[in-house]
Image (cartoon, one colour):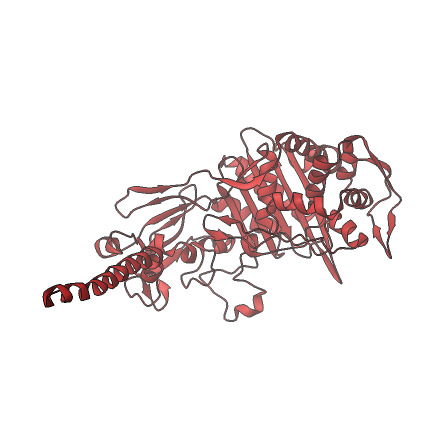
Length: 456
């Protein structure tokens, strides 16, 4: 073998290493290029740490929520809208991780894998985003919360469009707090990142499990004397219902009946149904990770299992996830993923992205979804009253999540049965008391806003 041949073979490892390095570099660039380009050190995009060259953010009706003027981000002229949409629009510093300024900063900057940030250099700004939210609906929800902390969400359970996303506490982005630590998690989007004891909204899950596993559940009756001894403790009901059937037990939100149902089902069946609905599993909405809803009764004693069936025990639920479950029931069993971005337009005005409907992992047998729809409808017609939801044909369930030593959280989750209003809603008002109070009133207020403004 001559020297030239030997030198040629010696170059092979070098060439292979070069090719491998090139492949790795291209892969890393494809995966991390958007994050690298959107780093706050990039002077093309940021000024004093604030995103300064981003495109305009619109609501679903075309109202401007944020735009760039002379290198500075300018927000909607309504203080109520600014506070109501803070956690979905975000702040220029990107402190709110679920806000568009942080979660979609690469899109707002106009970055693309092919052109990098060429659009910034050519047009002086990035892409425009049209969000699914309605500014008016968000403001209506914010006002109806009446100063309580919590979360409000509404989405179209057929398309996935997230029409309302509100989290409280909030602040006016034009007047940020000097010490946000005094505002009880003000940067946290409670709709996406919060978890709460669900209270009686969890009876929807227990009811579904019963429909799946107890063949004669719809004809069974249960006895409620106001309290029920279980093991070394007791389950207390808010009323004394006597002999009560399955549907009426949901209408009256009878703790004793649902504790007995949980005992009939046992931990394995309850766990299986919860898992099928997305509990204990990661769920994303438009690329944003939701806080995981947790349900685990594997080690629960008889009393703990009873309370879990009622909606207490150690169960924690993310509000957006609960809204998705309601949406799956309303849609006939197949859930869809909520989406935040409706469309994206390049600086030249070309639409480069439009939202698509995507199924979620939440699937309910159609026959059981139909039965739950009917039961949740009778909650309104027989218990709450249709007058609480004018013109909505509402189905729903309240929750009063009890907390040790504190006022209960107020919950409402439900949906409209109107064909022209395929919307599901969730409300959690922290320490606001009964679900029939602040939560239900807020749900009606935001749904009425969407109905009146014909936003779907």
